[in-house]
Image 1 (cartoon, one colour):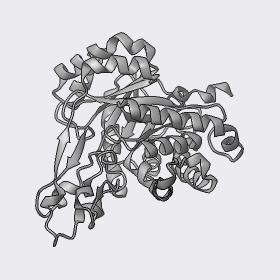
Image 2 (cartoon, helix red, strand yellow):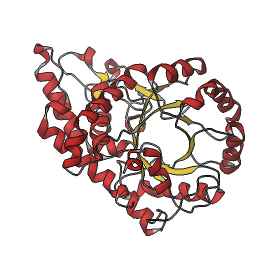
Image 3 (cartoon, helix red, strand yellow):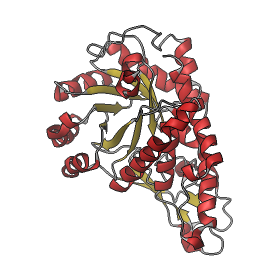
Length: 373
């Protein structure tokens, strides 16, 4: 049974589940609650922003889950004593995952019906009719999906992007107890990727996993081979994250098509390492993979040394996984506001009914993939 406690075994068995909290998502209470719920539901990896405060919030969620793991196991969720890997996301250049929406709310005409507020999946856009200065983007909640930009009838919403600073990466890995790193890149950024990799390289032996995330583009496969030449030999597990349609899983079933299509393309390249889907993944993804016979069957070996397997090793869920739990997060936030005068923090584990609902919702997604083992 002890091997079941190792998340990396999930890669070999083909049922790796990763929760993406968001490379730009910095709402600490939500990160903590999402980490807690999905850990108890059986997630293998929690991917968070490379921000010390966000990492600390995720670690608090992991600790809370550890204290509750025995009870969760008795209720059929997860496995007692099992802890997912903690991953941080980095980027080597401009990337939609590493940006925030911004606008000056004083420029919004009073007659605007505020479609941006309705379309925001993170509820990061608010308008206060009493105190206009508190209106606008809640930066900590925004994760850069960009859906508000084209829908603004007055074109006043824009984004602010940022790039990981190589000099800050090593201390982050050293001091925070991070288990894994994911690098977001794009075709044609080999020089930038190499520079970032050189900053990480002295500390790679401390990691259990490195993931490389890249969207499709002309020359993708040649670029991925070039990236492998930069990082080889690598002393830990390697994942190729195929970013089909970034941050769109909560939109509908059609978004999973791009994720699966790109996964097939990278599988066919037979790169060393595991292939994991992302970008547009949701409740339809597992069913789609099963229909296309792209999930490993029980007892089938998965060779990460040559990617000779024709199977997807795992799935990362981001926007869909977060939106799935949004009703619970909203109730926790409402309780927090109600208790503001008492200056007390409302924790998910202190609300048994909400915790049970959150874990059950998370498990409804995790179990789709885990039932394949």
